[in-house]
Length: 89
Image (cartoon, rainbow, N blue to C red; front, side, top):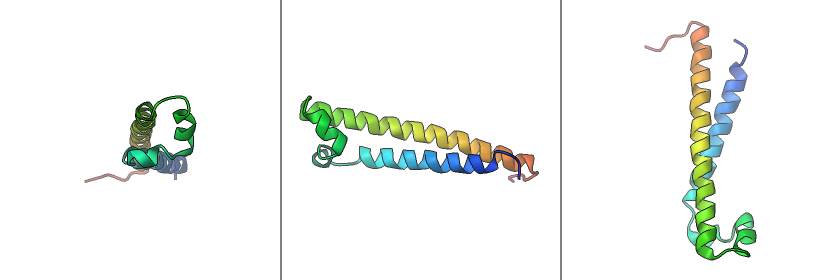
């Protein structure tokens, strides 16, 4: 195995976990969003609508970042496979 092979898989897993957790948070109903620990602290200062907007913005940011990280890690895995002589047909 070439150097960086294991790191690419670990990064791929972390990016996928980040994307999945962002998607799951984004799909939560508003009542459940307001009961999240961080949302409760935000909700003590802001209104319900602003808190839901903030939680959804964080979730979408996590989803986008996880997708970008997973894509870059997948390119790294394919690059390492190509360095080993594996071709995709």
